[in-house]
Length: 79
Image (cartoon, rainbow, N blue to C red):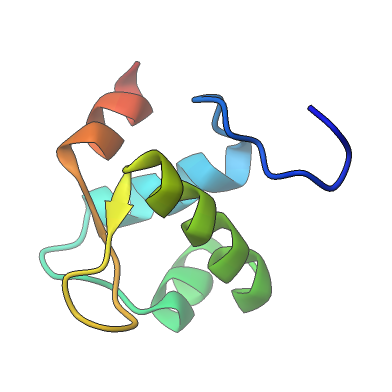
């Protein structure tokens, strides 16, 4: 991919997987600051990675500013 362009392939990087793994363990949607605290990632990175995960359909936002893993996300994590 081109530098600076979002990665639109199904390849998830380490941070994407950490976010998905954190969300798998949640019984309710999580806020970015909760994801950041749990994963140790910077909140700006979490926000950026969530955008990609939403584009891929791996995460959805059932309530504004909260995020939950989708079935596709669970499949992407194990695939």
